[in-house]
Structures are given as structure tokens and as C-alpha cells.
Length: 390
Image 1: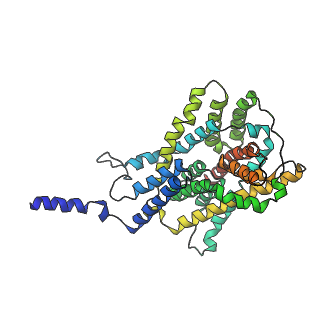
Image 2 (image 1 turned 60 degrees about the horizontal axis):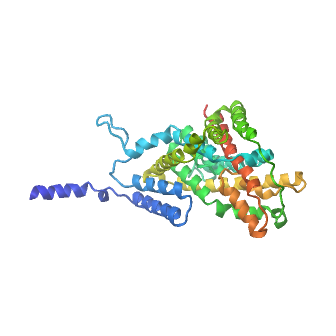
Image 3 (image 1 turned 30 degrees about the vertical axis):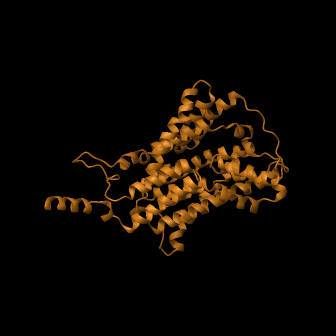
């Protein structure tokens, strides 16, 4: 009998309840909130559900799910093994392949000047980069980031989760990966809430009522040549952006060439879904209490919001400039879509214009700067890598 009592006592002592910390409890609550936002409110559920569940799993103590490789027993925690795909930049690059296969670049090809709006919407990236570098001085050293951490935080302004993860890992700043990824994906999901106030602040009702002409038809030859030319040009100008831009354009070529339909469908569906699960679980696994619950995390989330707001602001300011230069033919609202949250940012533009002008359609015009923003954020990440990887 004593043996059974001792065994029962030993089992209880090894249960997770005895390893549970205050930090674990807080992070479990965070995971529940994220699950509510994803399931109850529909905020990016395909990403937030696995991220939240990864957070939940890694904060259950004594499970061994995040254990490093043990050379003696030849074992490794499941989430730790899954994380290798993020640690070695595999998942973010494959995500770009899927995005390319799902993206129609015709609106951008038909109106290439909108490339400039995608570039202007990277303004917030550099504002946040400067802000993160100055934060140490502004807070008397209470919160400070090194220059590589500042770059990883700044790229949140592009509203591109995979690029944020890719740059953070490539710069070796995995200690802030969870905070950066959660901020990036959270702001992507909150685009419909964050961007409209900035739109109304930066444009008048008359501006929002500008009707843009129908886009010209884009030939199949143009659609095939675009990803090839874009890869070569961007790769020669900025080699560091080839992994992201190159795979994005490869996915798009699979879509447009007309002879690889099966591969295109796989990239858009099965591959994209599998990699999204792996990447999001890996991101969630970085949200262990001891790494995530810091003042720095709150600062990253705040700086991410600054970056995103200024990126929207930059796109709209350049939209106003293009309106003037075009003699009033370009609706400045489409500058709002210059961030790379595809197609959410473009839909926000359409929703805002239809609220006041039900018969106006700006969606396709907004898709031009929206897809340009994907390229622009990848190029911004390439610039950061080129300058900081020395």
C-alpha cells in the first residue's frame, strides 16, 4: 500500500501544476485571448489559431515539448524540432512562394506608377527603425534595442508577417521573434480598424470621391515576363532580397505561365496550408513566459503600431502628391493600400469609398499598390540585411 501511495505522490509532484509559474498563467491567458480574437472575432484565424495554440503548448510546464536535442537519449521536443524550419528561414520563404501563386500582379502591371506607392508605404519602417534606436536614450536605458533588433522591429511596419520573421531570424535576433511575429500578425489582422481613421485624416471627402478610369487589359505575355524581369532586376540591384522576391515571383510564374497548373494549385493550397500551420506553431512556441514577458515586448508592440501607422501615413501622403501631379486623376486613398497586407488593405480602401460613394469602385486600383507593398517590404528587408549583416 505504501508503494502505491508513494507512486501516487510522485506522480502528483511531477504534474504540471507543481511547475506552473505566474508567467505561465499569464501567457496561458494571452493564448486564450488570441484564440478568442481568432475564433470569436475572426481576426486572421488561419494564423492566430495555431500561434495561440503554440503559445498554449509551450507554457504548459514539464511537457518537454520545447526541449533541446539530447545527445544521450537522442530525443528532442516536438515544437523545438518544428522550429528549425523557422530558424533556418525555410517557412517564411515557402510562404512567399504560396503568396506569389495566389497573387494577381495585373493591376500593378497595368498601372506601374503605383510601384511608388508601395515604396512610400515603407516610410513607417524607417521611422520605427530610428525610434527603436533612440529608445534607449529616451528611456534612460530602461528599454533599449541594438541596431539589429531595431531593424527586426521596424519591418513590422510593412504589415508582412513572413518578412518580419525572416529578417528577425536572418539577423540572429530570435530572442524577440515571438514579440515581432505576434505584433506583425496582430496589426495585419487589425488593418480594418487601424487604417480608416488615418484615411479620413489624410483625405477630404472630395479626394475620396475621385473616380479613376478603368485599368487597361494586361496580356498573358506581360504576366509571364513580369516575374522573370522583376526577379532579375531586383536580384542584381539588391542580392539580399532574392530569397523573398525570387520565391514570390517563382510562385507567380507558376500561376501565370499556363503550363504548371498543378504546381500552382499545390503552392496555393496544400503547401501554403501546411507551411502556415508549421510557421504559426513555431511562432507560438517562442512565446514562453520567460522569454516573452518583458518590458521589451511591450515596447516592440508599441513600436510596431507606430511603424504601421506611419507606413499608412506615408502611402497616403504620396497618394496626395500623385493626385496633384496627375491633375486630380488619381484617388489618393489608394496610397493606403501600399502596405503589404494583401488583400485586406485594398479592401479597406474599397469599403471606405463605398461608404460615401456607393457606386465607386477602387478595389482593382488599390490592388496595384497593395501587391507593390509586398515587393517593397521584401526589398526593405533586403536593404536591412545588406547593411547589417556585415
